[in-house]
Length: 339
Image (cartoon, rainbow, N blue to C red; front, side, top):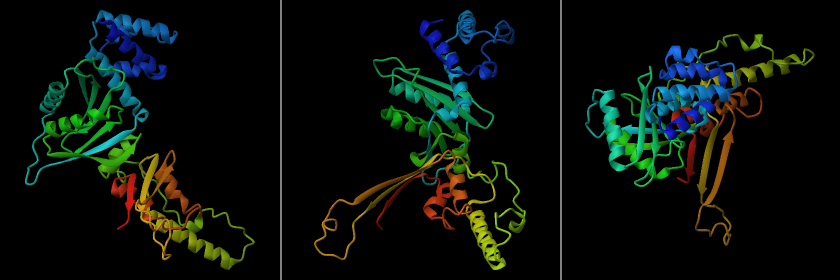
């Protein structure tokens, strides 16, 4: 086994938490069950890694085997990457073709290898009619960098592909070309939608968030829930509060639905506008360049946070459509300009 392959496998195994190690190694299916039984997983991790590297050397693991292990690790830790969404489309009058996974993989790989002398492309199919693709980029003069790959998840017979954000922006056009041709589409555009949660992005673009995520029962009348009202309060005020809370609850449910929201961590709004003033001679009014403003909302679970604002009394209901339209628009990056 090549030293670079051994080092690659070693670094990948070191990233894997001990409580996930056997599960990932079994999913890898490179080492046999009998070989794994010879490993004492209760000893120090460094010793476990050395034993596993020795077993891989005996089986002469290749760079393709190591890349597959890395894909499986990333499938377990998708949230370590920020994922972007690309949408493809057919040309006018083009019919939907039958999808052949083998043909897709061969075509995708050939396109990249023709353009770049040094590139490593690996695939792993999943049960959801999806294929995970790992691309280690090189140049005409340098070998592929196995430690800064791009990951792509493509769902067959759909126009969507999800890619991990990469610092190698120069390769984005080539990646788009390979996806478009291999999947038999006509063009590709990057959507203004990003997140660390791949499943949530998938639910948004496929409009599955009201089906995929577990629903919860909130049929209990609002009057039966705890409103935190003082029992000595005037009955008319209590009635008014109940009516208002019912209104807020109804609007919130109509806006967000009665199910958990897809998980996004941020929404960004870029505003460009010309300054308008009735005063003559205003310095800002004479300004040629538009005024620019950037607003970013962030939260571990932004949509659920927005959903809770009005019921918590932090914001008025209904919220601005710019905040509530994120799942339907399939965007969390907005550019707002003068009409």
